[in-house]
Amino acid sequence: MRKRRWLVLGVLLAVAAGVGAAWFWRAPALAWLSSRFPKIIPAGIVEPKPDPTTYRALKRDLEAKRAYLSRQYQSAATPAAREAILQQARQSLETTLPAMMRCWLGTPWDFNGTAAEPGAGKIACGYFVATVLKDAGFKVDRYTLARQASGNILQSFLPRDACVLMVGKPYAEFTSAIAKREPGVYVIGLDSHVAFLVVTREGFRFIHSSGTRPWRVVDEGPADAGVLQRSNWRMFGNLTAHPKLLQTWLEGRTITVKGNE
Image (cartoon, rainbow, N blue to C red; front, side, top):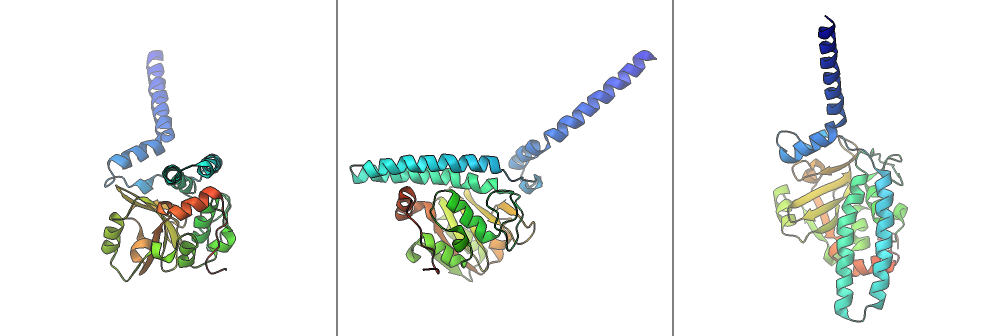
């Protein structure tokens, strides 16, 4: 009888330990499974949480990198040397900017949200874009920038001829156009929204503070990006591919907000 009780107790403890381990590892396990079987387990099943600690570290490290590259750029003796430094600046931004954006995932959306960092309140779409860019080292007033129309936000960083405008085009035509574009970090303006597009050789991610379900900062693929699909007006431009903007970032020059001159 005693042996049976110990056996039952051992089984119960093993089950409890297994349940506890499954609960603890549920998020990474689901993330791994969703990456392997996206049609069976959607990526959105894993609830993201804002990560202000990593955000601050990324912000600090990127500023140190910007300051270092700025000194290198100022002392560069040839056009080739300066071009090489601009490429390093581009690589740094294309690596760090998406990581900074994803630290905001799960932060609630609000039309009037002005949170200064991930999870510290709610954030509107314009403030999300403006805050990430300011914290990445672009010298711009985030309050002034965030209140502008999406086209003005984009053209505060890029000249009009560096932006592409598509009006009334089917979503398939838009995605086909993006597939032919150079990889980089884009800002995209929509009918009544502004967001980031992170474009790689493999496709794009639409990262934004969504004013529709699930009403928070999200990272969506082409098939999930309902706001992007439904928009009639789309203007986009590649921030990290523009040499003059990279130089502005390196040198810490102030960016004049379009529409507020």
